[in-house]
Structures are given as structure tokens and as C-alpha cells.
Image (cartoon, rainbow, N blue to C red; front, side, top):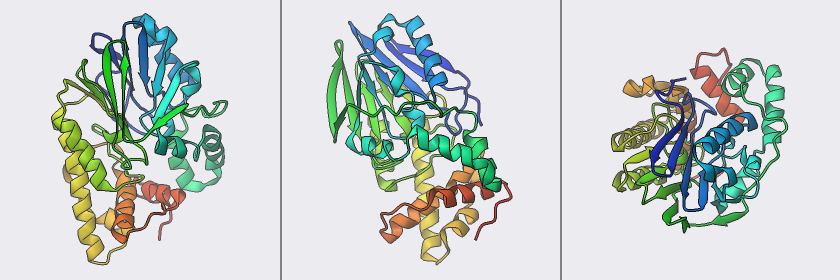
Amino acid sequence: MHQNPESGLIQLANGAWAWLAPGNSWGWSNAGLISDGEESLLVDTLYDLALTGQMLDKMRDAEPLANDIDTLVNTHANGDHCHGNELVSGAEIIASAASAAEMAELTPDAMAAIVAMAPDMGEMGRYFLDCFGRFKFDGITFTPPTKTFEGEMHMTVGDKPVELIEVGPAHTRGDILVHSTKDRVVYTGDILFIEGTPIIWEGPVGNWIKACQMIEAMDVDHIVPGHGPITDKHGVAQVRQYLEYVRDQARSRYDAGMDAFEAAKDIELAEYSAWSDPERIAVNVDSLYREFRGEKEASDVFELFARMAALAGYDVPTP
């Protein structure tokens, strides 16, 4: 896991904050806070209640309006961006309709059950625990969105205009960007992994590339990724270029008749090998192959974790 050079609560503008995790690997996610007048909006919660509680305490110390958060926006369905929702009591919780449906498919209880089974799953289970074993999924009450939208949603926080822009399906089915125009800040959720390998759970990759291009065209000073340090347009371009590179490399191997896992092992990651979790190439190539074939149904997630574990050096039997 790469360590973030800064972590904790970072002030970006008057009434705009970023919460940065200490690292950028599995489950270590970022969040944000926008406040103005008498209103506040939280962008994402964290993977478990302890992490979310720590973040909220720091926000409340720095910004009195965080003591009574009016609105919580979940950028997408992955638990490291929504499992702490129950701690923002009384807030309206907003997400895209696609994200709200996807959240219900892997609840905190389900994640706790998989972690409990992992010790009996051999080396793949060991890899899974190395990724997720430090988080506590027991005792979390699944707290879904109370309001959903499709496309775009425009709102205000005090006198600040805030735009919610749906750019998924990409990383997941319903990814959104949160753009606070007055603050010149965009919170990107997992459209951006900085110094970490993006993972294409859903696709199509073209949507993700377009989302990066949208961010590159924005008039902003601060870009807060879902994972990793605060970045700039150059960081966005690097993510886009990774996606384009992997798409093109996977396509040539698909056309040559190579299977998805062989292709993932064969692709030379070059400068991208220094990013954390490079083994995610296994999921990315699998998703691209599904896209090339026109298949909608996702691959078995345990098989995908077995492939990643093998690429990460765990002794996992693979086809």
C-alpha cells in the first residue's frame, strides 16, 4: 500500500474539505465535506464505523456545521464509500439510482460473512484477508440512500451550487462526480485512483475514459480522488492513459485468441507496475473481454480474486 503524503482532514477552500486515508489500497478511501451558511454536505462515508466515526469527529472539530449534516452523497456502491452511512443520522442520503440498487447486493452483513469464511479458503482467502481483514464489518446497519437520481442533479449548500453528475457505469454501475463550482473542487469517487491501480468492476471502459476527460475539462483547483492523494489534471490524464493502454493491450490479445487470464499475465505494465495493487489487471482484462464479447453478466468474483491473488504472488491454483 502506498502511503498518502498527507492524511486526515485537509482544508481546500472556505468551507470545503477533503478527508484523506493514510494509504490508497483496498478499503482505504477518501471523503469530503462542503459547508456554507447553515448547511453541510458530506461526500461519502468510510468502510466501517470506527473509521467513519473518527472522520466525523475531526470534521466536527474543524467545522461546526458538520455536527448536523444535512445531506450525504454516496459517489458509488462500494462499501468503502457507504458502510458508515448510519452514523450520519437525519441526513438525506443521495446516490444515483444505479448505485442504490447495487448497494443492496453486497451489504455489510454479506461482507462480514465472506471475511468469516476466508480462513477456510486457502491462499485466496489469505489474500482476501490481507486486503480486507483490517476492517470490521460486523454490527454495521445497512443504510441505503433515501433519494436517487439519474443523469444530473443540481443542488445548493447554503449559497454554493453543487452538481452531481452521473458518469457510470464505469468503475461500478452508478458512479457520480460531486462538483462544488464555487469552491473549484471536484470529488470524483473511484473514477480516480491516484498512485493506485483502477479496477473495472463494471465498464464499459469508454464511459470511464469520458469521465476522466470531463474532469480534465473542468475549471477546478482541487481534484479529490476516491483513493490516493489530492491530484491535478496531470493525475487525471495518467488514469485515463492507463485505461486506454490496458484497453488496447487487451484488445490485441483478445483478437489473437488469448484467454483473459493469460492476457492479464502477458501485459507489460511498464510504469504502471509501480502503482499499488497492480494485480487488478486481472479484473480489468476480464471486464474488457466481456465488453469485447458483448456480455453483460459479471464474472464470478471469487474466481477474479483467485486470479488477483495469483498475480500478487500467492500460491493459488489457476486454470
